[in-house]
Length: 535
Image 1 (cartoon, rainbow, N blue to C red):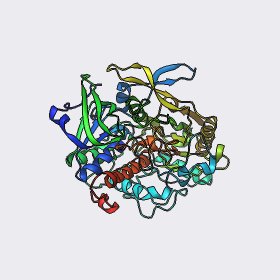
Image 2 (spheres, one colour):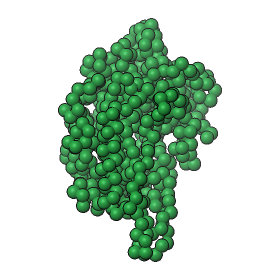
Image 3 (cartoon, rainbow, N blue to C red):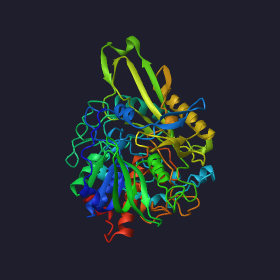
Image 4 (cartoon, helix red, strand yellow):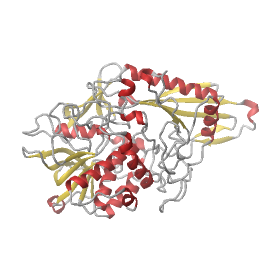
């Protein structure tokens, strides 16, 4: 795949002392840059990946991205892991299906179900603290859904910005079967506009939604929703710059981020008054571990050897069902299966389930394939995903390897082994999914691995937030305990990963962090929620 990085920074660009440098342009980085730039701050975004054109697929980007060392099933190590959602401008939001679930209240204090763990599982503030940020992100992105249809969530208080996308034929079958089983299905909330919204056209549902860039902008990716508006407000973006380390002078203040240009190997120093790290939970931890100095011999923020620890991938598995009606199904003509939004059906009845291992289960939701299939009209093919959280463990961590990449930057290692309870929880949810598939009338039920153990698009927990520096890396607002001007705005700060797709929660936390940064570090009044929605 040919990389499109755009121009390298000039001497004039590098001479500037920006108000804020944001590392990463994905779900959280683009949002942080948007808020700060639209409030009048000078913002620069550095992004390791390149720009994505319409003909570039998720597989193309993943194949061209750096791999990490992971422990394989036979116990040996291989440089075959996935330390990215994707490495490109806009991150994984360019290719995602847009499932925008909120966390449940139990996710903010899972110790009430699981008890204390090796690491604190409780968030440093209550679930209600995030509600207005959830609502703001849903409005800004343009989420389609049915308010208060998920019985496991508190009342939302208002409608979603848009009505739900139409339920797929497969989603209709799943909904009927789930209702017959006594479950309470609901339409998956999606960052896909179901009709024209703020100059964005409604979804045409004419191709698979996941793993490709939306050609009409109906999907709420970070580029169209936040990064382009940030740049229109003056933010600078430099793609193809890998953040190598933050430089310090023996004080609690970072002066610059040293970057390497991926195509030339040339090193650049980008200076700023404040830094917000949004590279993802693996890359942010690795950046801090590489940021060694006189004051930080183990890496910036790592005084208590916690940076990189508590790595969570989230466990998942697909359950497929095949059904055949034979002659009773009518003419054997064929039809295309797989077009349209990624998911239109979900059930959360097993999320808090006394029968599940540890009393916590997870989600089941429709997960349409990455490509279309042609099926006879008397056949049906259903696909759902079982998604469960994994418990943060001290031994699951991001580390630096002894080898280096082509530019001399140390390799990344993802040292991870699932907790047996989490494996049992995944098996429990996959069995519930199989029961649901059988209830639709499918004769065959298959299990399809998701490959979560090699890395994941759900990366969490390596720089957890909390009030105690001995058990957390950042304070409750995302600022490093060990530094005065370095914040983390990605999934690294989440103390517990929850059993939901994480993008909405990561963006809501990032929005909260960016508002706190405005309040605490700049003479700029933090906008109210109403002002946020006015842009």
